[in-house]
Image (cartoon, rainbow, N blue to C red; front, top):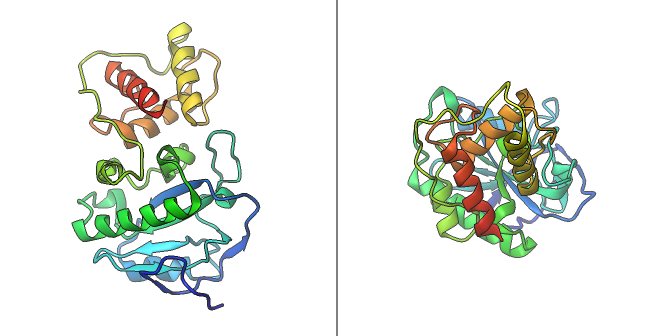
Length: 246
């Protein structure tokens, strides 16, 4: 299939892996490829046997490929959830960013981040995607995914107005609350995370699902320590975000 790119700076390399979009676009999801080379990642995303894809693919040099038309549902998010939405693929645009992932958590190149930022600005403007709905794959698939990683520079996107970000509250040495704890403080944390959009049970028990959501939150918004425990820094950073969003 050939098609005209939705983003003028993109070159089309068509993937066969897509389907009918069943929701209006309201989310933008960022991924890293997590593979040793760009070539191997692109081959996977364009392989019919692999049954995975994304709308865009951003190389380390900043060049942008479009694999799937934005009008179509790419297969990038898998089983995911955000703010009540369970068909994240239908409701989102997916961007794969070339990076080896946690096996080599090196900085993303400046040219690549500049290209990602420009692409995000264009997509968000055309689809009226709010900054707080520009998310990590790890935000919407907390039990399965950790990309684009705690080393992704979300602040650069926020400075361009295309994601919601606050300066993380410094990490302290308090134990906070964590697995095995229960009570009103746990329930309040769960309610705040759920209100922000995360798929977390609200029952007042700090279970494994809650720890996974807290780790996902930390990975995106408080990357200084990603351990799944809700220390004072994590809770205060979440409150700053809630105030900023309001």
